[in-house]
Amino acid sequence: MLINDEVQKQVLTILAKTAVTPTADVQERASSLLQLNPGQQVKAEIIANLPNSMYMARVAGELYKLEIPLNVQPGETLELTFVTADPRVTFQMLRPQTESVQLSSMGKWLADVVQNAPGLPPAQEPLVEHPEQAAAQLAGRLKTSLTQNGLFYESHLAQWALGGFSLKELLKEPQGKLSRLLSERESGSAGDETAGGAIADSRTLPLIKEQLHLLNTGVLAWQGEAWPGQEMKLVVGEGSAEQWDQGVEANLSLELPRLGAVEARLRFTPEGINVELVCDRPGAAELMRTQSGELRASLAAQGLHLNKMAAKDG
Image (cartoon, rainbow, N blue to C red; front, side):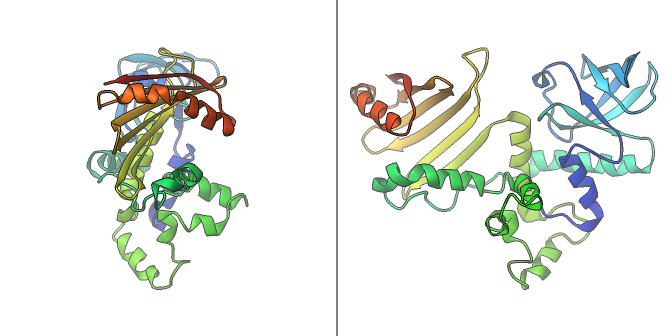
């Protein structure tokens, strides 16, 4: 995110979950109950005082324990802006002073980005040049595409500040490519994009929107070409504890020349991988099952154990 000097402090403090004005952290209840988007404003009604700056409050119709570094009394109502659910639910409080107007504007801006900013376009370059390269190169190229697409830029920027990330790698990301360090000619264009009091460079808004979605849902998506002409979509997230043991779950969607549309649901656990294949073309599932031994051997060669594989025609 490229930000101008006037609002830099506001944005960075929100990203770091520390701010000049007090922050209220939800200590209890699952964040999924809130169903709020970053930047959305809510009211918190103080119900009771608890020890150690803790308060019982009603937020969005639910009771929560809030840590509030202010002296407030039962019956008071606080204006809150939802910031993030990771690693725990965090609200920004709006004081009835002048800075509350600034934070209110920030909340409205975040909400506008979520609702109106364009989505992140598919990856521009195929991961590999030919399908025969897929087995050897696809995983590494996909990892590079996911880590250099700008979604983790602020995290990498923090690592760079601590000496744990190279400037060369940082400048490969979309935000880094807008840096004046790459070209003196870009200093004028970058200044124009952020002129007029804009909070962020307009070219980064699709990334910011996707970052907010990732923070709120915990779901990471990638879409592009595995090789020229071969569309691929990958969605990665934490598994649902209600459905199966917690771990990482990934959905991979492809449209293959011989097998037609195939969706692979991968569930990664400490014990190994469960694979469920749903095939659009009749007979494709049977072909998949006959080749399961080759899949097991390929995974074993990478140090991965196939717990179970199921295939069906969808």
